[in-house]
Image (cartoon, rainbow, N blue to C red; front, top):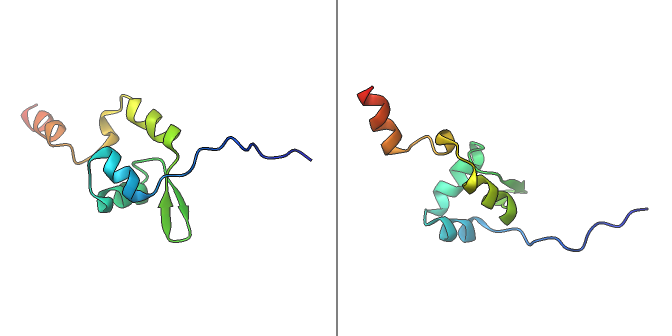
Length: 78
């Protein structure tokens, strides 16, 4: 039987992600619920893998955050 890898990164809490991104914990939870940000739900709590969050931040997707005021201004002027 294969043994699971012991080199796992610890999962981040919503508070840690909120502090890292500079946003509220409520926003982190809402983004996780709407699948805007990669997350894992364990019971009633959201957890996040640091490597997945780093990749998510690097991805050049303009629809990453739907409530982006700059994107709204650009679509309103076109």
